[in-house]
Image (cartoon, rainbow, N blue to C red; front, top):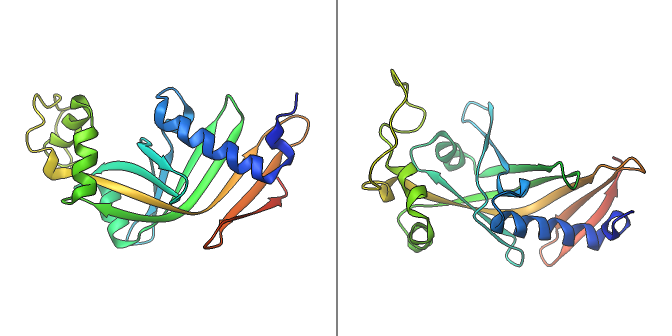
Length: 191
């Protein structure tokens, strides 16, 4: 049976936003762990999996967390343009999101996100040495979150454009949505 969103641009957008909201709430959802793409200062692409912590449709904003010592933090500091990619095999939907990242460390945004973090998540930011540092052997997990807050950062991703693709034997559907400054404008694309 063909879902309602298959032939309706507004329904495609609504379904995308529903899946993003579900990704925040449901740790088993494919939308919980998108891939974040950045560009290094030398122009090389980098992609890694992140956790979607919040989605606010009206301000077009997604929230991610990172370590301020990480490569992605440095890359987004140098070039805030970024992309997120998500594929959900259950719904056969792929979403590619383009936007700008704003970084928050020692401010109210970061403080509120830190307070909302589960204790076990806070441990990740207490790891020494910094992420990506060569080490001789695997490290044990930190026993305490002490020092972790100093390394914790929030990435607020402002959504400017996204592409939606639904794969179906009866005919794929693909659409692009652009923020016009007041609303979303959708167009069908050849799959």
